Length: 189
Image (cartoon, rainbow, N blue to C red; front, side):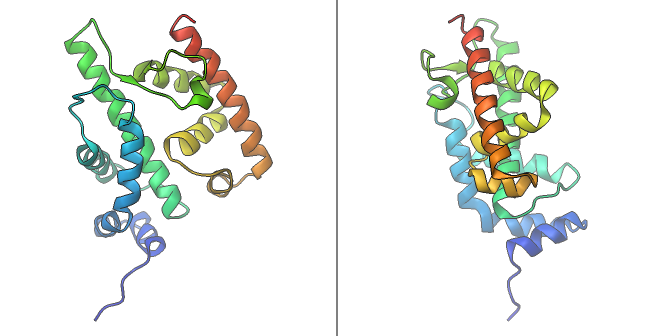
């Protein structure tokens, strides 16, 4: 009976060009991907056409269609896959908005990012704000993606980015304050 490969070994094989390794990794991290997808869909409008499984599969198709990325470990891989889920939702919102100009897909942000808001923020506004943050400070934008969208802890984000926990805490606090201000401006608060 063959010995099962660990997630780290599967990630290494995938980075080395073995597409089957990604296929083998998916069942190993599926529950974590489901949790990430549920976090993304939690604040979406009722009747959203993308459900948890569909969002995971859309992200998987994007993973298959791109060059393998360097994920340090299983949690980092899930965080990066979660970012792809966010991109799927943004693309979905753009398509929907193009079809129906009078509305947009809405997503609820965590209190620490949107404390003073009325509860919902347009997913496209979040994406635009993150793009602006990326232009201002790429590391802070990456911290937001890993912490907020990927669900990584301060320590896991520190390990993933190879910087100190103090730096991550500082970047996280600064990025949250900046995004809060941007999101308040987006809703006219």
